Image 1 (cartoon, rainbow, N blue to C red):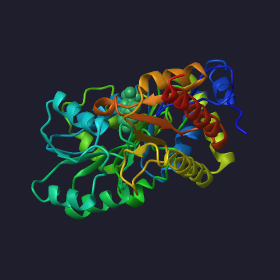
Image 2: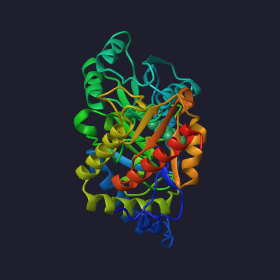
Image 3: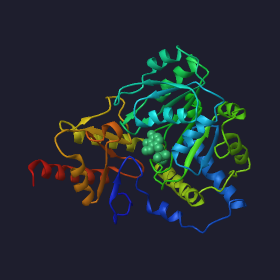
Image 4: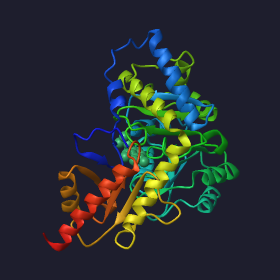
Length: 364
Ligand code: PLP
């Protein structure tokens, strides 16, 4: 049974997510200096463990920004475009918007919302032009699609020398990632999703190829200069003051993850996805295509009730479920089942959703 506190509305959102009491508590530890020996011990322990979770020998470092900051950094550390964006929802579109705002050239390969990015389609796109980088969102939080990252990475390697920049915001720590083996050059995630920490810290992993590119990137500025972050990490330091309380919490979260076991953690997420799909069967249509449905959130389409009213009724009973995002806001709801949510808690949430659904339908 989960040790999540029950004195507040429980978050079944696609982030932020529930924080375990021991992890919350770790954020109240006495402060340490950001240039002393203690921070180096903390950074060495946490970043080495995160690298293990990501199966990478590349550089892993913390950023005091939300994930969008790291996405912008990923673009700014490029010497130039063009960049190919694999767009299948609102967050994969964000890569493209960011790139345009940074005045870098690029193209979009767009698939319909609810569909995955198909590797062979990527192959065709890569044959039309030589791209400097390709961006992907591994788990598209707006639609509930888990893209086939390993297969896409293989195609990117076969067809080009482009850097593969991947947003793993809502998959990291819930879905297995093997960055080096698969050939992912950069990945990033904010800690308020499957890491189950408060927001404010983003974890970034970069390959040697990304660092080589960054060496001569002229528009990268300073705060998001990957080379600077890498140099500082050589002595387990950060260029600027890191979010120390969040790093304490990350250490506690990693200890908890170790006790659960990574494979068990991944399987728990898949089991919760399957449970939501069986609960929905015959009533709510999964928005994402079969075979590509996310283990961390399920987007379900409906048309016959007022979603906002329904979700508000559930919230009043202590269960906060996500609405749709962007284009799908009015016809989709999203059940988040990531981080420290477990099958028993999820069951309670589904029961409340059911009861409130029946009330709305019967007009009571
Ligand atoms: N990418 C994905 C896949 C997301 O789900 C989100 C937020 O939900 C972001 C990027 C943006 O994260 P942030 O708002 O923390 O910058």
